[in-house]
Image (cartoon, rainbow, N blue to C red):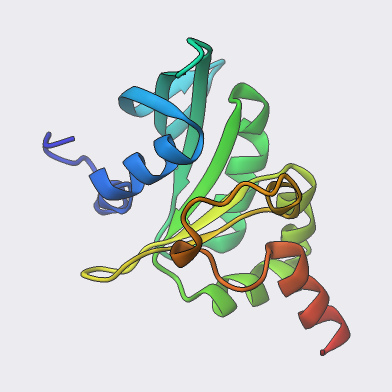
Length: 161
């Protein structure tokens, strides 16, 4: 991951973020490819690896600095190409959720079980799991997780709780 980055957004998927996601999914050695084209669709980053049970896993990442609706639509279009899909952005969590909700895209993100990672320069990131992830009961890094899941944030915004 020490190669020269093609775009500023490539820096969002840092070594720490990549290893956090790999550990979350029980993946050991990883390979990360930047701007990988699969089935005619370019994905900002793709992680390949094997679980401890030797099962192959692929994880797609869409990275955007500002355009919430574009990053969600790209993640939705590419979701079925991977075992897991994440959006990585430096936007404030509540700002991202408000924009996504107001455009109707947050529901698509939830429906497709796309995770969200908020990254901040020189700070610890925030990992926002989907509702399905919380139900599994597996959360070895609670310090990265806010007290709510995406579906709970949506409920709060829609119902004004």
